[in-house]
Structure formats: structure tokens, C-alpha cells
Amino acid sequence: MTRRHPSVGAVRGALADQPTMSMFCTYQQPDLIELFGAERMVRLPIAENTMLGMAVGMALLGRRVLVSIARAAFLFTAFDQLVNEATKWRYMSDGQFTVPVVVRGLTQGSEQLGAQHEHAAHGLLSQIPGLVVAVPGSPNAAAGLLRTALVHPDPVVVLESPRLYAADWSSLPEPEPTDAALPFGVAGRARPGRDLTLVGIGNTVATCLRAAAVLDRDGLHAQVVDLRTAAPLDLDGVTAMVRDAGGQVILVDEAPAGVSVMSALGLHLVRAGAVAPHRLDLLAGAPVPAPVSPPLSAALLPDQEHVVSAARRGAAR
Image 1 (cartoon, rainbow, N blue to C red):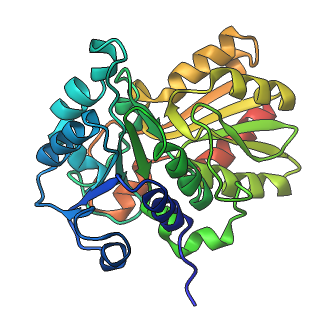
Image 2: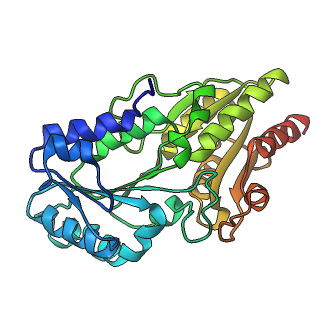
């Protein structure tokens, strides 16, 4: 029997615990309609700007809304509602209003859907004041961050990779022991190690775990850190974990370096004295649209071989 993804339980639990919570989506979910009713499980046309605008209005009246969009890329059509409405009401009302809206969408992950469907948007979204940006790096992390998002008083975007729902995760150790709620702004140690540190976010957590397994055979024991959230960013927590391991630090992100949260993290690590500049590497995605061609995609994103090569070069320095 196929194991149910842990995030399913997170959503069902929130709907059961919060009778006034609603869910907007562009597709039918018969199981949720049967459990919670069509008046709460609302199917809407493919119009993300309208979906998010309706959700903000309901949230201002005290209703929590989970907005499930098929792809995170489609959130760009709703930027006015996200940037100028959802994230501004607490500030503009001096705390009289909150907007408990959660937006959930898929990012990119070996589906080859092309430039208009695949985005590593967490770096861009992390620049919006008042927005929490959760980027789970494992199936249990997806559930744990969703649980926290669905009780949070402010807007949250949860960016999930399609790879979290793929069978190849069964070949990796699950970094989170359970699917319990995970706090925002607290990075997790996905793998212990004493020689160097690999830091990932979203898809690159699995990349770092696979690279660490290869490096073990070289006698290099790499610690792997999962950022979990792009905003808030756990600068102090990661710094402490880097100091524990010492040695080289490799930051790995599919977002381009210019908008990567890893750039800010790397600067902080150097300023804090946790790593010397020559011992720090940033592996980031190329600043180009996502191609449909698998070989082109592979050439544009950091993978296991890139991480292993960077670690070996660092060890030889």
C-alpha cells in the first residue's frame, strides 16, 4: 500500500482543528470535500490574483485560508495582493488586523515543464517584509512547516518541490525524525559531520545529503544543514552549527547568486568569524529561465557532483 505523504495529515489536522478555516484550489479534492464540505473546500477558476484577494478579505474578517496553487510560478500573477495587501495590513493597522493566509505551491524538480512553470522563487519572495517563506527540504519538513504555517497569524508561502513527493526520497535518510510542527527561522541539522558543512535549502538539501554520502568514502565527514525557511533566515543558528564542525563551508542553492539567501548567509558567516573567506564556496543556479531540455537543466543547477568537487578542492587547499 502506498504511504500517504505526511503533509496530507498536516492539512487535514488543521481543517479538523479550525472549523472556520477554508481552502481555495483550482482542482477538486473529493476526499477533503467529503470530510469537510464543499463550502470550505472551494474550487475556483485559474485566477490566482482573485484567489489571493478573496483570501485576504476573508482573513481580515477572521477566517484562515489555505490557498493551494498548482505552481509557485503562478503566484507572480497575484503579486499585488501578496506584496501590497497581505503583508502590509498588520503594519498599516498597527496590529489591529492580521492576515492568516497560507499559500502553497510547487517549485521545480525534474519535471521539465519549462520557463513559465519552474522557478526557485524563495530568494525573491524572501525580500518581501512581513512574509514568511518556508522551503522544506524533506517530506517530514514539508508537513512540519505546514503545521506551523496553518496556525501562524501572518502570511506564509510554503514552496514545495515535486521531488518531495517522488519515490527517490526513499533512498535518502529522512532528516526530520517526525512530521511534528517545525518552528520558523530555525535551521535543522540534517546530518552530523565534523570536517566541513554543506548548507542546503529545498531541493539542495537532498543534493547535499547525497554528496555527503560520497564524501564519506573519501574520509570527509560532512555535516548537512537544512535552512527550512528563507525568511526568517537563521543566521545565528547556522553560524553555531558551522563553528561546531569547523573547516570548509559550501552553500548550495538553486536560486541565482544575486537573489540567493545564501549570499547573505555567507556574508554573515565571514563577518562572525565562523569561516575564513577562502574556505567558503557558493554553488548557485544560473540566472536564466528554466529550460525544458534535461541536459540543459542539469548544466544550470548545482548537483551532487558540483558539491563533491567543491569539497575535494577545499580539502586539497
